[in-house]
Image (cartoon, rainbow, N blue to C red; front, top):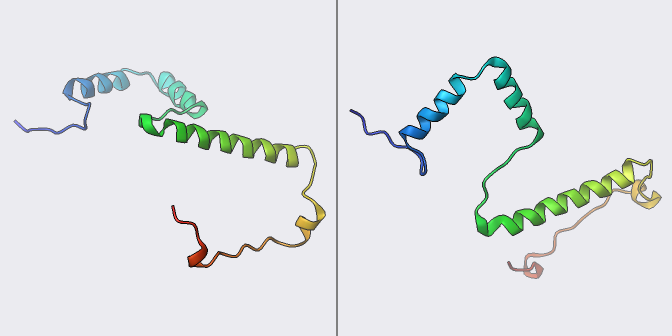
Length: 99
């Protein structure tokens, strides 16, 4: 008999339940589940990181909304920005902020 190792929170009974679930699915049910996965995805995040993740999501949504307002309605960036590309120079090491 082999001593199988499972990831934390998993055991043989859980693996068997999951295998039974997927092996008993029809092709139509499997396709529907895959399609549903494209619409929304969930992921586990440690409790301490939830506020940071929420901030990142809000920041991204805000940036997307701004792009939609500028480019989705026919508005263009100002002429001065369109003419010359932005050049950003890195600050010398001694002047960089420390974390």
